Length: 162
Length: 302
Image (tube, rainbow over all chains, first blue to last red; front, side, top):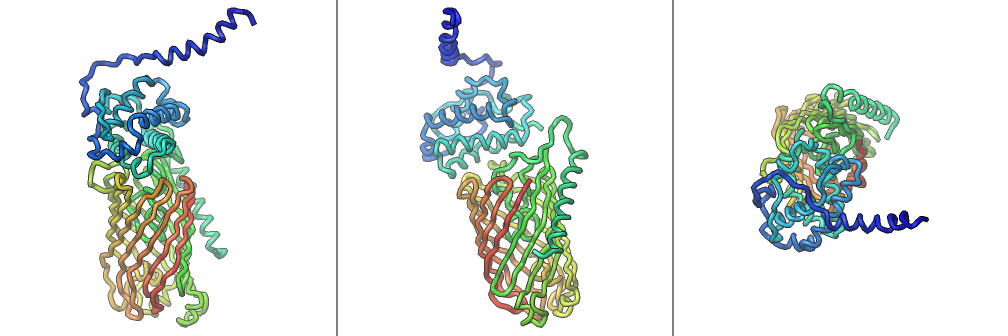
């Protein structure tokens, strides 16, 4: 193997790693930042947030959910063009806010965030299943999972467009 | 299951399948691929196949549309159910299709086998009442699963036309008709934050023992309003346990009729297969008292 190729082979993973570590979110059109954008009122207790293992637990769940949804043939196309960095950050914020974990949600509202994505009820169902899978992996008890799903379920009316 | 029932069952399954294949053309939304199986509903929140063929609990009819389809798809299932009490046996086989999570069409063939009790009743050992139940259910408003920020349940209206093949015996014991039609209004709500599934149904009916002993009687031949209630707790994604109650009229003079109750566990092996087991208390049936026993149902969906 010639030296330049060897360097390239060695450098590629490093570069990929660096690109990932320093990836920046793509810019979005300006919007008013508000917790109301989260689309649900927070829980009033804190046991559920604890059952999710706090913010680190939510981060693991969101990373698994997004990775699985990128790989899942049912949802792959939806996630193809998505700004993954931003999605993961805002999703953790949203779930943390809704679970009364003391976070602020800085993302767009549900209508703006899902506009023109053409989401169907089946897409929503697939995402819920992927979320359930990620929560199972994190070891979140079923009853606590349902307390979160109860908060997210009504968003279907906003995000499903057809 | 006897030969004739098997044949009827196969016919039904083919009918259901052809309906499922033929129907989409008319209602398909342009640009949206129609899916036979998809994930629009959470496991078990749509109920299982009830004894009368439609979506519900074991004994009660719910407002949910059978199958796991979404507004863009078709779902459906076939079921086989057996109930064995101290003195009787009831077998039911049927099929149901859910169209676009809006309309449900169902059929069940029930064989009410009196076994040795038939001999004691003077009907002959193994005397069997056969009843066909044709059902249609239309979802009117609400979404049992997704409307978690509203109290409004999912509400549906339904009709069940029932036809019993033992008209002569029915009339001999004071029944007025071997055919009848039930009308019902059902409300189902999933309280996801509490992992509960609740249902209440009002039914206008003349049926004796849900029609297994005909319709109307010497004591009363008018429609009466009856109630069906179910409450279930989602223990896990796959397991729903709960109880049901179904009130019934008391139209026949020769034998008292009681309300029905059960304790059930429904387990979803997958979206395609679920098993329901129940302990049932069916009260007095045709002079034989306190009928209790077990209910087992297999449901395969597509």
